[in-house]
Length: 436
Image (cartoon, rainbow, N blue to C red):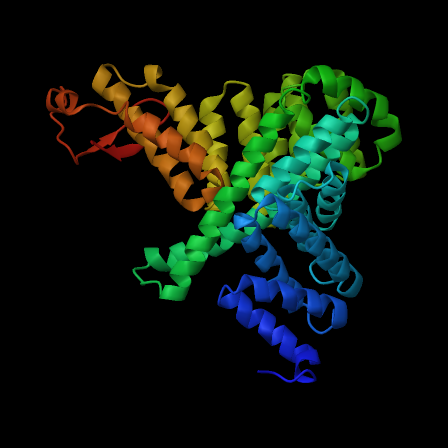
């Protein structure tokens, strides 16, 4: 038994909160949480850490009556947190509060407001479901009144996700390098590899879902009038210009004169290698292919950052791909991989281009189906080095594996090859693979 004086000791009550939570003595823990909020809200930020976990656990089993009480206590707790620890991971705090309000049936505007606060600080602090929920609300609220805000929100989210994923992929690459050298990962490294893989995969899926939600409103029909209207006001804004270019390129709106104006403006305000690559694309549109390729190569050679160099090389590959010049597209995609070996999208581009070339490579069914072996190899490599596109890459790999030569086809092939033998694919692909 504690004396009345001891029970008024903030440190004691905080420790009781911790102990009660860990032993799942939730009723007592709730009382201690409320006491701490009323009497010592500044004692430690961990009050709010344990409090948040406690409320989440209690809500799982709560009756409607108890849920109302938990809602009131949660409101008090988060308000105290924002008041006393405004700089303690505010993005996560607002995201957690929005999630909590959703769970207790809180006001929709209040939920959106907290997601919005979290988003403005760091979009990646929102959970996967929270990002999707927030972005869906942004589209519903603003698609008819402020389309640029929707695009800005999308761009900021994707840019933040990409930056986060890049960090995970770099860490994955270092651990894979150890494995490839024959070293065994210790348990902590295995846990980290698993966490990096899971997190990058989750963020990659978020980006795919956001792209899907943007599909309806990010068409040339919407983009061209919007960017035409806002061009003069934003033409010196590098961020606006590059985002507009990227979106128009992605949605195949490059034949509109506005795209050329945007690229030329980008070249003027920021004569960077990336701008030069895009400008070279315009030269190709004008039929100045040799000059464009010279421009591409010069622009690439000027870039010293490996990640940026890889992205520029991939952009060149994409430009050739859109023009049906698959061999050149693959050549530049391979250069992108040489600059950044974990560039998953470069691998999947090669895989899809190889698969597209099946009917042009080989004289019989066996030789043509061997192309799928090469395509599968690149797809599965993408899934390994870049879990953020792992779902997509793995699906490609399975689809290509299903089209490889069957055992019967291998047995009857006219080249006398057996399973495990090397085979060099004819035509522009010129890859050596193993017979399955």
